[in-house]
Length: 288
Ligand code: UTP
Image (tube, rainbow, N blue to C red):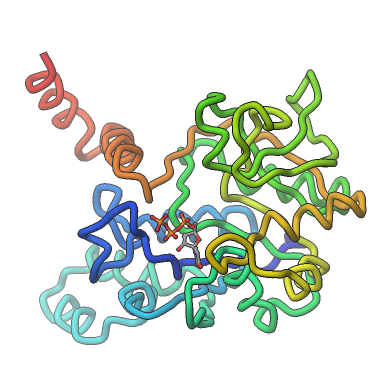
């Protein structure tokens, strides 16, 4: 069994980059073909050996809780109509894992969202997955981070190289010349200007964190816009020599961004056995 038993997935953000759909609909429930983004993230955590999921939710996010709960009326109807396959699909979602929910009363930033999960996690290392970052399924991103944690005993941030003009959207870490295996993080800067970035390696939504991070989060002062930055607590871990970076080779989609969301849908649809060929034929017809 994996040493990492719990995964925290914050889904309490407002999703302002995806308005108007996010006015009354969590962005984490947007579908990639027919499965919501959040289910892809949960399934990645389970593949890495996690057996319980803590979702940090907020107002207007009930659709996420309902998605992982029993849907009694629907199940009853499907059963009576003999729709066995559909019934299995519906029940399979509930059976994926054990789910716990904590509320973040105000969206005060990622650091604050993670701190809200403190009591549900307790005193053990845990995985943190951002609820809108999805990786191509053939490379299980979180598994390599769990392996890095088991090898080093230190907290791990998943990183990917990004174009220089994008560094100001991410937390950026220092990187060695040969950045192909795990390395020690000594610097991490939140949203730097290209000229101030220690490298082009960005933290991309997958982490393994030791419970020590909660102590640093609890001691944080709010930053810009009253938000509590996870990066500030990670910097404390780095200063204690307790943080490593692990490159993630898989293709990533930030589904909270409209263009990335569209790309993710095209790529996931093309890989589907039941839809891929017809969809490709359609794309060839419209893109001339
Ligand atoms: P984002 O910055 O992508 O989410 O946070 P956001 O704030 O919803 O997005 P925009 O910029 O307004 O469009 C990454 C993840 O952290 C969660 C979000 O739900 C998302 O899954 N988050 C963010 C929280 O749970 N609480 C927060 O206070 C902020």
